[in-house]
Length: 254
Picture 1 (tube, rainbow, N blue to C red):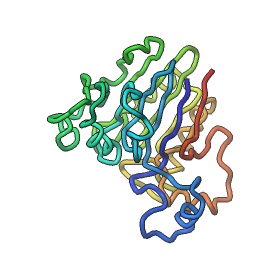
Picture 2: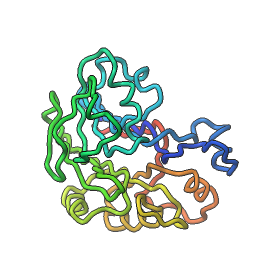
Picture 3: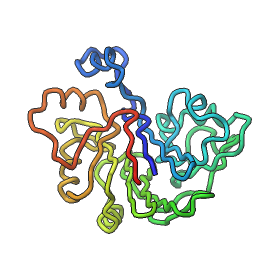
């Protein structure tokens, strides 16, 4: 099993258009510091699962027939925008798993094209993608302004959690994490400790969570340029079990 962070940025990405902060200037001159919109890729037994659909030129990176399923965290535009073009392709249908949001996004439900929307996910109810019986996928409730799910992946003896977009972790989800104790938790960390927000974690909140599950490695994603700017001058190192994610960073589970 291999997990790749396709993008690690907030809704603005990085560099932010028109911003001249040092983090954005660095991202302009050093492409490896840029951040595409937050999304992920899971590869298991030769099959490809996308986590959200916002990767630029998605259809060029993933030719027809190579996407086996799409797992949506939620229906905010910055997480589903590539679906609007993808749906009109001439290719096999793609199963789309999603939280229970009757409103969805615009007319995706009404005109799905090749997108085969599955019955809405239910928190804590494990499912399997066709052809991947050994991969258990469990939707996890997040705290966000739209219905939102993270995902817990269990394959052989490995366990990985992908938790974005959220502020804090709901009690019912936290109990599952305590029970499963994933080796890695990819977590929304949009803001520096100086910013409080009702939709996304800041660094202080994530560090408090990481302290409660010290045997898991916490990997930060959904990162704003404000957090990158804060980290440039931060004097205290991150704990050993916390690290900052970057675009195209990959985790391999053998």
